[in-house]
Image 1 (cartoon, rainbow, N blue to C red):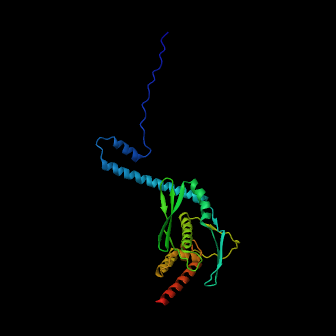
Image 2: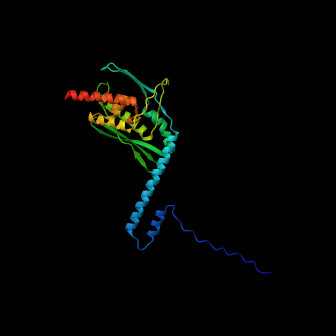
Image 3: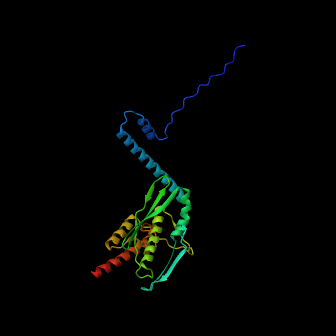
Amino acid sequence: MGETRAAKIIPRAPEPVVSAEPVLSLIERLANNPNLNIEVVERLLAIRREEQDRAAQRAFNAALSRAKGELEPILKKHEVDFISERTGKRTRYKHEELADIAGVIDPIFSRHGLSYRFDVEQEGAQVAVSCIVSHEDGYSEKTKPLKGTADAGGTSMNPLQALGSVLTYLERYALRAAIGVAAGRDDDGRGGDVSPPIGPREVEEIRAQLKAVKRDEMSLVKWLKIDSLESATIEHYKRAIGRLNEIKREVEADK
C-alpha cells in the first residue's frame, strides 16, 4: 500500500486593512510614501474634516427629526391673573414653565443623543438668550438671540428677581424656537373663530416699527401673549401695529 501523506496547510496571507473612509485610506497610503508631500496631506485632511462635519450634521438632523416625532404639545397649566395697580386693567392668561418643557424634552433628547444649553449675554438691563442644540457626534446649531429687558418697574420684584424672570422667560421661548415644540391648551377647550397667521412681510413690518420706536421684540411678544412674531395671527398683527402707533405718537408728543 502506498503511504498516506498529510495535506500541507499553507497559511493565507493576511488581507490588507482597508479604511471605511476613502480619504483616510488615501492618507494612510501617502504616509508610507518616502516622497511625502505635506501640502497634499494637509488638503486631504481638510477634506476629511469637511466630510466628518457633513456626516455629523446629517446625524444631528436625523436625530432631531426623530426626537420631534416623539414630542407632544406641552400643556399650559400655570395661570397668571392680576389687576394692574397703575391702569386697573385685569391680565389673565395661562402659560407653561421652563420645567414643564424640560420635563417633556429631556428624556426624548437623551434617547437620541441630543442636548441643549443656553448662551446668555447681558448689557445693563438688556438681556439676550440663545439656545444651542447639540448632538453627540459633535454638531450644534444655535438660535438667533431673543432679547428682553430686566425691568422691575411697576412690579414688586427687586432688580435681581426681574433679571431671573426675564431670563427664564427668554430661555423658555428660545428652547421652543430651537426645536419647534408646540404649546397645547389646558383651559375649558371652548372653540371660536381662528384668525389666520401672518406672513414674513407682516413680521418684517412689525420689526421695522419696533426698531423705529426703539422697543425690543420680546416685550411686544409678551404683551401679545404669543410665542414669537412668526406665530402671530392677523388679529395679533392689528393689535401690534395699533400699539406701536400709540408708542410712536407718545414719542413724537414728548419731542
